[in-house]
Length: 257
Ligand SMILES: [Fe+2]
Ligand SMILES: [Fe+2]
Image 1 (cartoon, protein in one colour):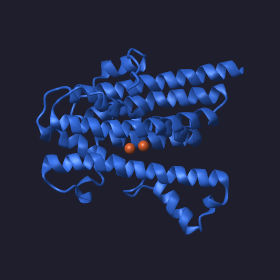
Image 2: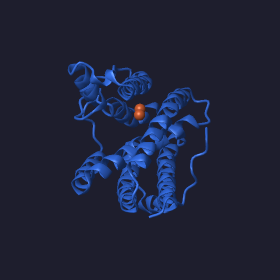
Image 3: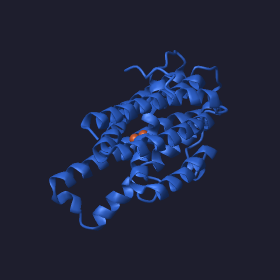
């Protein structure tokens, strides 16, 4: 296999990601640009609050970023002994701080909409049917090829921040939507970096045509399932015809904002 072919496939995989991230944005945009009462935002806000905490493991999750940090502290900080380790430790701490900020921005809005504190008991364990399908798929793909499945999931995690792109790009003078727009702008600017980290990790870790084909095939399973999950988050029926179009590239990539 020539280097050019591998490079082409990597570019194709990136382009595939761009389609799905635009798809996630489209679903959020459809919701955010339709007329709503403030209470209509509670469902997606609660789910996203939970995701921001659970993703890094601030709410318990096995093999999480928080677990890695705690284990390192427990083992007398081996990561602090090498240049690469220090870089990694600092990256993990900084991204943990960012994820908490994402939670805080959304939780402040949620609390003002409901007039109630955001209780961990209420949000911990919130699951959409799509989350269960994505988890079941993860187990199946890990059984098939653990390494590539992990790469595929980290590539797809966050959906390229598409929903935050949609929020940040809102044109509105509605006070609630302006707060959502501000929160989404901050989150988007952080998450784009996280997505880049995942895409680079995928590109550096995989080289053979076979591996890249496996990654592509896994993404073509995971990403449509993520679109269904996002539809559920915004109380919409997943539109299977549109999902198929998006998977086939019939969507414009997100503009730079
Ligand atoms: Fe986040
Ligand atoms: Fe993130």
